[in-house]
Image 1: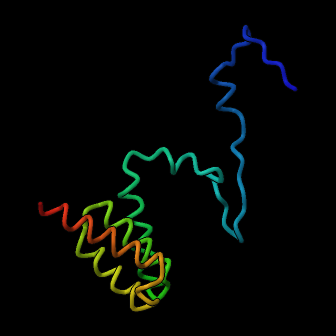
Image 2: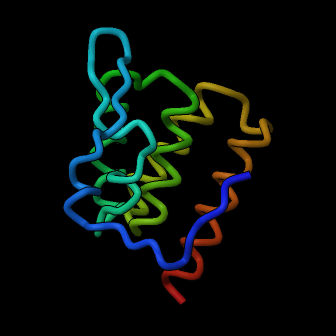
Image 3: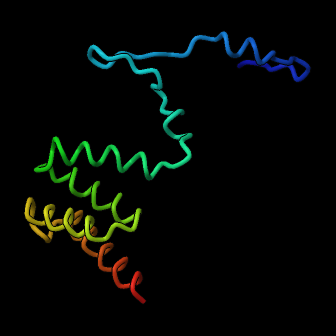
Length: 116
């Protein structure tokens, strides 16, 4: 058990000198292994859109890619793109699959509330 002294003050310059933990993923270096920098972004939806566009470009026939795209497009009020992703997800798997069914219901709920 570690006891912390309440009177002990840390100099901010000392904090800057502490090395940031880095991890390697294959041959690439990850400067934010905990994801703190990414979680602290000012506009996370815009950043998520950028990742979704890359996923749609390189893995369009993956069901999880289409479901993620539908979710991000719904949250950013891009209903036509969400509809396109849900249709593609329904064609990749049966429409009775729970994840696809949930995406269809979210799209329907968002679409009906958007116009009324």
